[in-house]
Length: 208
Image 1 (tube, rainbow, N blue to C red):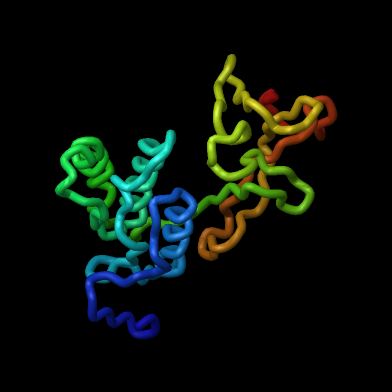
Image 2: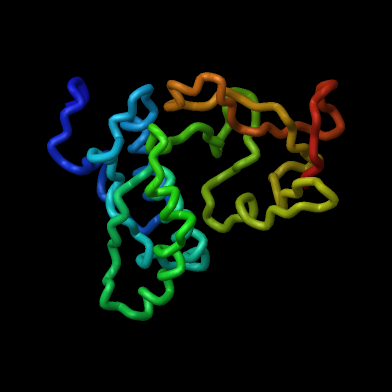
């Protein structure tokens, strides 16, 4: 009961059915925010927000391992009940994901309670916010805009931004999108600007 705090179960579902897809993982993690981004979170010991079972072991594709580690880490951060969702009789899959699901650092974060379950505090949109371009462009799908980022001589170098002129990663930020209701001072979305025509005082790192 959101008004009284009464919780007759150990956990409660926060979103829809999950699938072994990174977009689904992010969507279901986002669904826990309403129960966590509060002065007194509804997700707490004895009554955890549950974004559905883990899909570790079910992913496929070239980014499988990275996506499964990200998924497991995110479930630990938001204090989700850690329920495995793959065929545990499949010894090959079990051997592959064992280092992920037994990661002691991740499990320690999951088990820790310091008054909050963990929630979203900063978001980097993958689209325009007003007239400011965001650095992150497109989905994390292996496209040129989302892979191949490197450091070179202390500068963050992007492989492609789809612009003829050189762009700079700046220290400008834009307001966070919802739902960071109780973190009004958080700012998000590092901006990019034309390197040769940037406002005075704006610090840039060269990207291409």
